[in-house]
Length: 345
Image (cartoon, rainbow, N blue to C red; front, side, top):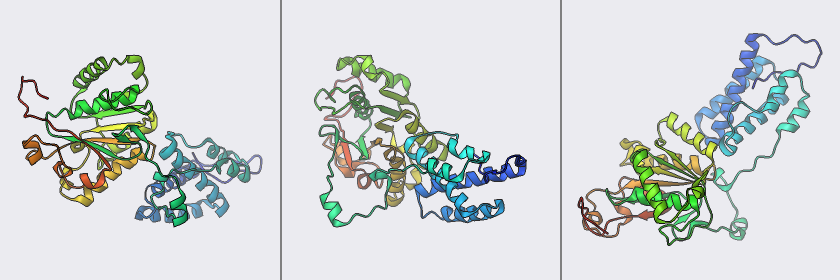
């Protein structure tokens, strides 16, 4: 999308290449600012871009009304990117500004209302009357197991079948059948299962065995279950951006991320503040698009509950910030020690 002042007079010569480049740079600055502002309005880069906007607008000879219209277009684009999941190119209405459309008409078309859900406004402040009179209810996707819109974690030691149980939960959600043939699924959900540990062959085998065991027809899963053999990373921008794009493109109701250690920076594993920020960064990318994130994680190897084959506690989860950040947990452990080739329960 390129911006310039409307060419109101007929016969006006087309803009030069240098002017087009300047307009394109201005459009990019506006859209970068709108996106950064939605993510964190207090980030220093936001204020720096605001200074650039003023300088570039002055250089192009744009008045305040024109800049306001352009900011509406940029805000609309940022909204589509973060909520609607639209991809480039930019809003077509902005394109027509180059060709001399009336400013008021274009502004009316662009000034579409932007509705944010609760989890998209982290700075909302409620007075007591609004808070106490509001109807806040937890909506279960799986009765007694998984709440919608709350970051969840499935945790267990090695060989405790945590990935298999995660796959079983994803299959139940996608097919609308009971989880473990016991826990009712409230509605069919679109699911994205992301795994960087097991491999496609092992996951496919597990999915087939689970579907067979619970008599699930493949048609029940068609268009409902997706696999990615990679996971996002909180500190690797490319993988994080691909994660957001995948959520926007496939629009899953639930996303599984297996395992946690491949999605976070291990150098921060002992720092509760930094790990909390990493978990929040990943979870918010899903929650902002109405997708419930479920992480799959390991326990401490030498935790007493693990070595004694007892029910796990929150303190048994590996790393700082895990028990503090997540709002729901599914803790899995074996009843007896794992021995290769023996049958265990």
